[in-house]
Image 1 (cartoon, helix red, strand yellow):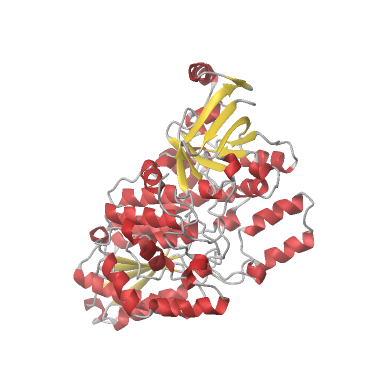
Image 2 (cartoon, rainbow, N blue to C red):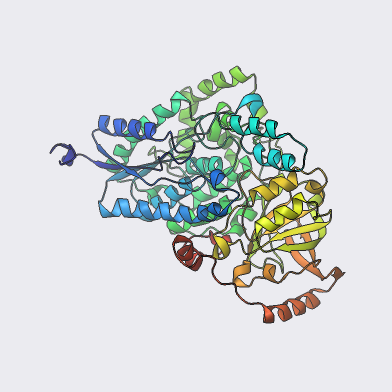
Length: 554
């Protein structure tokens, strides 16, 4: 009552509206208008909404310096705040509003942990700039400028026009992928993931989500009643169809863990094999991500891969997935999307291919294992040049990304090399993204098809090219990647899912000989002192599990 509530308000269903709103970056600066719409919808449905905030950070702004080391840790901290907010003052339901790389998976983790009736609203995707310029192109332009292939003036123009509105970055990076995953899990209103952030339809969605949260509270339908193993299997099939970010192999297992389920990397690999890849959206495809909604978004993807989905799973509508898809056909959803398509002069199949005419038929993600990655590693093979699907390369190890990118840009790295970046895993430095190094490689006409980047760190969802990440065990734990030396031979075989050390100092060796050398090197290897002696990253490095389990704090 001290903040203006009435006695009558106290008798209504109490709904927590948690968002990552803040002036932190374009992905979150616009979210408060959706908070207010949700509050309005809650009130009109007979409930009372309370605003809570756990502002996120931007991976893009954090790139290129030690700020990116905080990125993965921020996911777990936001999930922790959701737990604190919801459990310290109990609520009947929650609306969770976020847009970006760590905030969306954080909300999903928090929802699974507290298991309240919950619905997610995502803040959509930013518009493309002039000539369909999108943010992920800046890394390549930056590398081109450093090599003298692009003027400073032109790079500055691109920088100033790549973010013309609020919303998630306009490509199928981690933010866009996780928005799609939230809907695929059944926790969003159908068709509402990855809408253009400037679209008025999104405000309507936030209002309707507020109303629906009251219904969920009255029904007592909790998150774990909705999200089951079948729901996760649906999400993974959608992930394959959209060529989703490799970071999903960190987030989906971590979210499943909070729901009391186990999803490992092998599940991803198994389900991606034979899966049809349909979405022609950047970075692997042609169009900016705002066109995804124009083509009908998640529902269109689901209609195309319907034969591979569990249609009987429950969703936040109180109906099954199959029932939702049928309702969308009747309520004019696809006609509304078609009107947007007409404005850009495209057909639906220009953006989302039909199931029988896919871009690819073996999914988009592979898990590689071998004596370099006994617990596994991750490659987004849909973004790898075919020339690099099978290769034997010479290791060029670096103990941080800064040294590696300097070697790439100064042409010290030559065709046939494998750039190794280590001590960048969760326990090493918080598991930052290697975005600028991947862009420097993929934008180089020669190196982009002749070398590989292998790391115990991770990659931006915008990354493309021959990049293998999440190598486990990581270097900080004394994994084989820590024992590599200059010119050791590494075999990559994506079709066979192999990442092996096959030679020492340029000389091919038997498996037994390699193991013997690694054992000798391990005797002299010493763990490095923690990079962070105090604070959040000390806690994270001490408690984070393997990347192949989800990199969450345990």
